[in-house]
Length: 296
Image 1 (cartoon, rainbow, N blue to C red):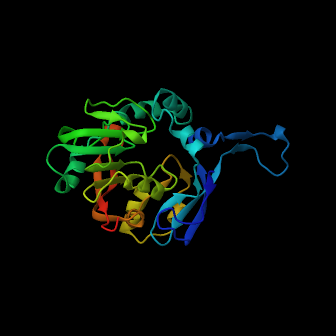
Image 2: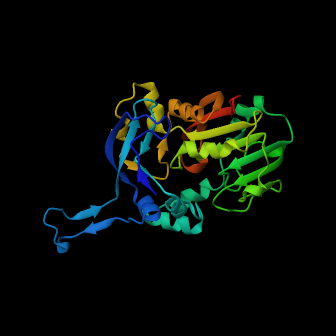
Image 3: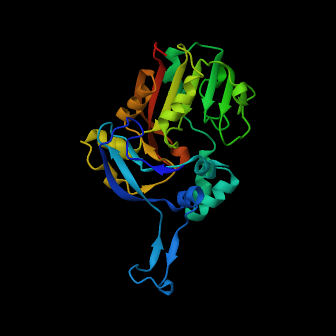
């Protein structure tokens, strides 16, 4: 069941500051089946003014680890509603109704990122030079999978079910298709979308040994990055709307959820990326390289 939460989805802390916010209408319609409602005088409401009613939610800011997130957590069917055909033709047309110009933006987004060299540089000290076996969890078509030229096998697990772009890459959906373990597990730009990040991370532990490197990447949203330069204050009051990213990670909240899953953090970095090709001059990401703790 989709539900609201009263504890942090990263550290399980209960000290949460709260403010009302809106779901962006595309998300409310596609995931929840709640399109905007136009209210007119003819409806006969005595105490509600005419206008447009949008689906409401709450912005929550954890006072323990700094995680900023929306209170409502999608259930499985709502996730299917939202991410079936993600960035495909029907999805793009639906979203363009609410966000004119999205189709053009999407065309640049589906071309892939241009910073794999940064990811590979971040990870290279932990991996062999050749024949790397890779599981890219949520890897779309594999266009953003790092170390493609050095891999002997790439498995992609992604709900979009799009065909892999590389000859060495294979889309897998059944548990029998997985290897027992991989040298590199990639979880890039996934945790900000999922209802409970810890659950997703724990799914990956069975695909890892003590020698496996887990690479985690999430957007370092501007509101979080700015909060680190000045003392954080009422971030939830500044976050007035929610779109497909339902979690905004701080470095502390990312570390917290990784450690709660029994992962040993080898390295964390905040990086500014030039993303001019996507219509955004720069973006920021948080990167983490992890291994299983020895007790696992």
